[in-house]
Length: 458
Image (tube, rainbow, N blue to C red; front, side, top):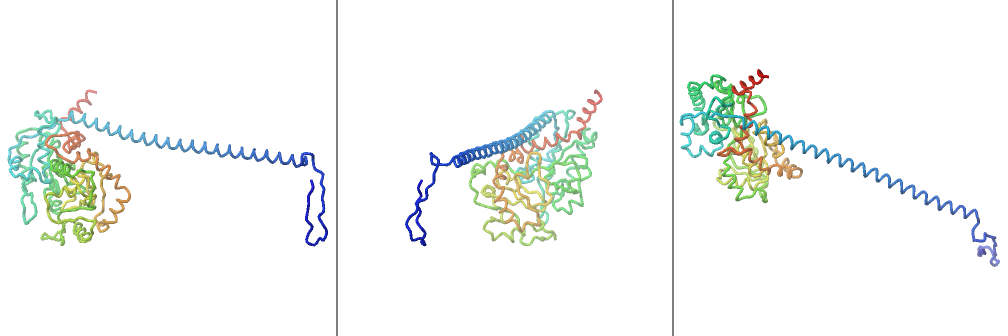
C-alpha cells in the first residue's frame, strides 16, 4: 500500500513515498485476530444483556401478575364472604320471623282508632305508631292465641292527637293513656303480670320517645314512665351516649314518611336525573333562636346555617312551608338534616328515599336500623360546631367520593328499609322492627320457657 503525504508547510520539497509491506489479504494476522475477538465479544455481550433484561422482565411480570391475582382473589373472597354472610343473616332473619309470633291487643277505640278521625294522624311524621299497628294486623307473624305469642303489641296512639300549648306541641295525655291501657290488659289477661311487661311492645314516636315531652330538659327530668321501664319501646329518639329517655329496652325506628308520596314524587322526578340544586333545606330557621321559652331552638345550628349561607347561590334555603317540597329534594345533591328540638328529622328518610345525600348535623344521633342501612356509606356527618364550614366540607365530598355515596344511596333496599307500608313487605320498616324483636327473644316468657324445656330435655 502506498501512502502519499503532503509535506508540511516548512518543507520545500515534493511528495515523499512511504512503502509498507502488508499481509496478502490487506491486514496483519494480529489485527485480524483482534478484530475477530472484538466482534465475538460484542455479540456475546449483546446476547448476555438481552438474556438478562428478558429474564428480568419475565420475573417482574410474573410477580406483578401474581400480586394482582392474589389481590383480585382476596377481593373476590372478601366480597363472596360478605355476600354469604349477608345471605346467611337474611336466611336466619327469615327463619326467626317465620317462627316468631306477635299478639296484638284489641283495645277499645279510645286508645287508638278514634284518633284517626283526624286525617293528619295517618300521615304526619309521628304516624309510625299507626302504620306498625295496621301492618301487624295483617301480618303472618300475628297470632290470635296469646299463649302462642312471643311478644305482645300494645297499640296506644300517643302522638296522634297532640295539643298545642303556647305554640309548642304537647303530649301530656300520653302517660295517663298508657297507664290506663296497661291497667286494662293486666286485669283482663295474665300475660303482662307473668313477665312484668318484658315481652310487651309500645311505640313512642315523638321527639324524645318514651319520655313523652317535646323539650329535652323536661323530658330528661320526667324520664321513662315507671310502668314501661321493663318493656320494649319502638322510638324515633336515639343517641349513642347515656340518656334518661332511652333507659328502657328500645329499638330506634325511622319517622313516618308516606310511601305513596315518595312513589308519586319519584314518578314525576326520576332519581337519577340531573340535579340542579346543590345544597337544599326547607324548614324552620329562626333568625333569633332564643324563643319565648328561653331555650335555643336547634342549639342555634339552623340559625347559623341561615345567617352564613342564605346569600350563597349554592345553597337553596327556604324558611316557609311548601306542600311540594319533596320535588325540591328530588332535584338536590345534598339535603341538610339538622337537629330541631330533637336530633332526628323526617328529612333523613325523605332524603334517602329520594336519592339526595343526607347531611346529618346532630351530634351523637343514633340512626335507625343500622344493620340494614349503611349510614356511613350513604350520608355525610357534620359536627354541630363545624356547621359554619359546610360549604368547604361539601365541596371536598363532591370532589372525592360523591359518586360512590350516590351509588350506595340509590340501592332500592336501603329506601325500602326506612318506609312503613300498610302491609309488611320483606325488608321494609315494619319488617326491620320484627327482625329487631327477633333478636330480643330472650325477653319473651314463651321463648324462655321453651328454651329452658329444651335445655332440660338435653
